[in-house]
Amino acid sequence: MNGAGIDAGYGFFAPNVPSNYKLVFEVHYSDGKIEYELPHVGGADTGLRIATLLDYVGQTHYDPLRELLLKMLAYSTWQSHPNAVMIRAVFGFVTLPTVNDFQRGQKESYEFLYAYDFRFHKEAAEVHSP
Image (tube, rainbow, N blue to C red):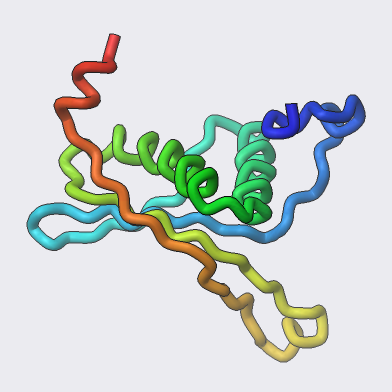
């Protein structure tokens, strides 16, 4: 229930405002090319849910669980890039400037927290496809 955001009735209808965690996928190909992807969502409501999921990932102190959650998200990205040889999930926190700092031209900063490298195989995807 907690992972779905429905552990409290009010939380289901009015989810908390998530922190500023950010997840970027580096999609690596055998020829050395690298592409960058953000997690894809189907709509605004799903975007809010993924932001809440990233909050949970950021607050997870148990590394194997955090890695598994990011691997599931990376797998979704790999399905869009089946020729990739590796996907690196880079997880961090975005610090926004104060109003005064923003007016002086300061931009947000990114604090690296974790990175995981995942390799998926086409054979495994074919076995599990319907």
